[in-house]
Image 1 (cartoon, helix red, strand yellow):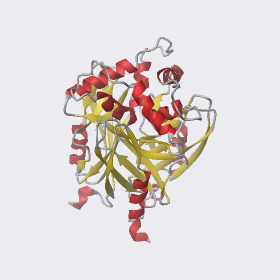
Image 2 (cartoon, rainbow over the protein chains, first blue to last red):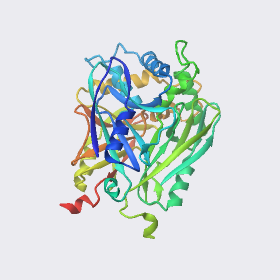
Image 3 (cartoon, rainbow over the protein chains, first blue to last red):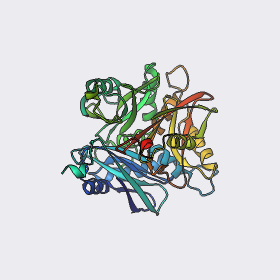
Length: 140
Length: 140
Length: 140
């Protein structure tokens, strides 16, 4: 119950990946448990935020640049320590409750892959942990 | 093993919800595993921090306002993008280890529901994932 | 499947604790599931970030001091509210996918214990949640 997906990102980006989780759940006929959505990169992250007004995504990216600019005394020669910092502040994973075959997100919530140092080709892992005693596939 | 609780919040608030987790654990006679404490809102979050000196909660709310003020060039017309940012920085869930029927928190740690855009009526979900082979309720 | 480890930290510190997770996995012959790496302290945290260039760790600690200095109007008399804030921003746990007996980290990722108010003697908990139906130890 481990899925890997490929994502293409822009320089600074928030890619709505909720549909990838729904795809994994449906493919397993997964019913109840939790999902770990995991980013295996150190200059990107995973967050949950508003899906309705796209201005929120705009404002989040704006705020990240404003509040965490590149510092002159950063030592890392790649020059992307601002992206490393955001990866630790936003975090590289989210844990989502799955209830009766659906992610238990709030009505305004979607799951986003956050790019802090793109454009790049990225990966995301989704792990499903069932609380059902038997394989849900076989209970049908 | 999914619980939903209602919470009322002030404008900026940190509501200690540790007792809600303890309630869920006791109700299930849950012994060993993990709990996901989840906030289904995009302008609120969940964190773990000090429970002894209430000045810490004061200082955290003060710091959030100071370090992440509203920006003039935010586009989101609801005017609460500062709250959306804090939701992504603090995060909307915490995963807590449950050991022998108790949350394995540090002695100074409590779980807080963080309100960044209240006052509101909010919800919190608690999901328990057992590592025991059989239903702990039935082992008694 | 719960492990406790002791860690000694410097004033501000990021201690690579990936090897502790690998130790726990090997000791259990754990195959597939998730691991919760948990910090039971309110002025420390857990993060995942770069393991190759040590300048990244330098830059993260530099940035944390720069962007979140001590505020004059903090009330908490211990004088370490800046550390409490970082604990909530960085977070006190990480959830890691375990696949075929190995943590599914990105090639550049390691797990760090973050000290924001040391030097101190600290603890870290690691909880393993298996998705295998039977105890993996007994399947060999």
